[in-house]
Length: 588
Image (cartoon, one colour):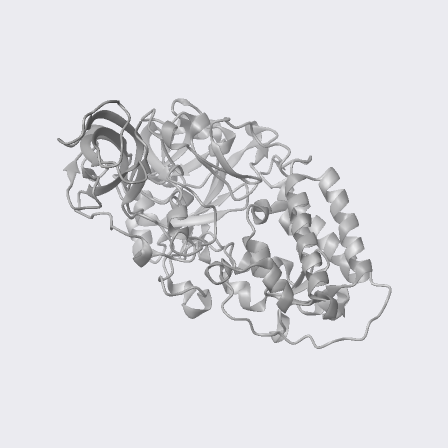
């Protein structure tokens, strides 16, 4: 029995792999003249149709088993990272589990205190205890309550990027779905994959980017390319998407809405041409960094959820557009300080792909905050991957607040609703907390202003020094040799805080040498929105493994210093790793 359940589990894993490989079929993600997202409504219609089909297909009425929710221990990435799927199979004998109809599953939709059930690949899951820990937020996962997950994963294909979703789900199995009902879902999915792939219109990407997942696209800049140019070429700028890239049928009909109606000031719509002709154009050079950059370092401590970024989810560009404060003033917000004092403290941004985020009005209206509505990147129109036709640039803030494809700006008394502002996605839990139910998530702040970071991108051997009792007979370094190396990299602090120093060590912090800042060191005081490049020459000893070990730490104008380790700042979402950047290399 254990072996048969193991076989079924492996079959489900193969189903996942197959679904992932078939994720490049055809569909369109477009917007019409009213800026309504066709894909949003189309996808919701598909999901509703599938839910209805699954609920009404059942031809056989089975005796009902108990639908009570069974408690699970903390279901989070940190708790299941080491699980072996065969061991889980032995504890979850699928052949002995009850069979449920789609009608029975639909009854368990979380309403009136009922548990939340979902199905995938013919297996029924009770996800009740996982809702708070869903990385995409409770609001997203609850959309599939009482129904099949397959159509949602057709859109949110990041679930196929690792084994984590299935590892989590194997702990939630409560039964099997009636074969006839699963057959109906499979038929719908075949049609959906054949005729309605939201990723068909994705832009072409540079072959040198390191791709973590392509549906949606998440790709970082390799270390050897990262600091080749102070301004990152748009084609090599890192990419972090949550959804398919919007495709505008007619940009001439695109409008940006600024809604001040909550404050009694009405609503104004701007065409792209309006922004270009009615307001002064400005430029700002700023670095954007994904909040999960260097998440892979956290994973060395304990598994987190999300893309295992190296150091390459960071890039810099010169953005061109209009001041956000100027656009707000033209729309009728003459006195933002008064509005803020009256409780209208938040400016919400809504994007064509369905994302909603917000920033403080104080930042948006600050004449020294340099927030802009951008249509240019390094002097060229925004590429689709980076927000065409318009994106918000919020210098010094986490990249997620620099929302792409903006279609609406809204003044409000509270921050934006949704998982990217209020959910677990961008909130840093304490290191000891792996279950979001243990904290009051709604009162925890979401990431805004960024911390302090650095990275090493190039190591070049200059010379070798060998001990007096040994002769230098070749240019190849050996264990025990001291080699002089030239090291280079980058450093950046959020909030406009200037980088004042970068320190390098080759002996785990026993001694340090200050690097020379070679580019980006002349930015305005308190408005240093972009990274700096640095270089440093220092000696390093070759270890028994034939490698040298190096670490960098940056210091900003507030004399914040990067911490030595990341174990004390580990968090289940893997956000904000700013510990010393460590690397080792063979320098021959």
